[in-house]
Image: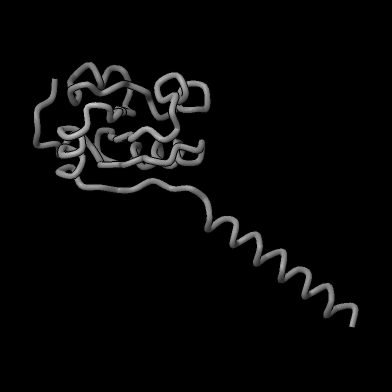
Length: 127
């Protein structure tokens, strides 16, 4: 009987732990066409370039703010994105770092994060 009780408690703890992980915040992957439309329709959208400064200097999306993925934490994010409900569009060079950055921002409590890949496939104007 004692082992059954221990097993039951362990099962409940495991189930609750798994359920909590499923409720974690996340970001929304979107196409570059959707990102461009959001940029054109909402002047308050935040465009976040998560590449390194030298990459940003070679060309970036108009109005993009540089925040390298390795520097994203609660302090740096809140400086650039003070409102955790702001619409934030995240990109990098090829789409790998932007996924990491979007996930990090979601984990920090940002609720409107959209990841749209990399600038190498961006068909629109850059500066």
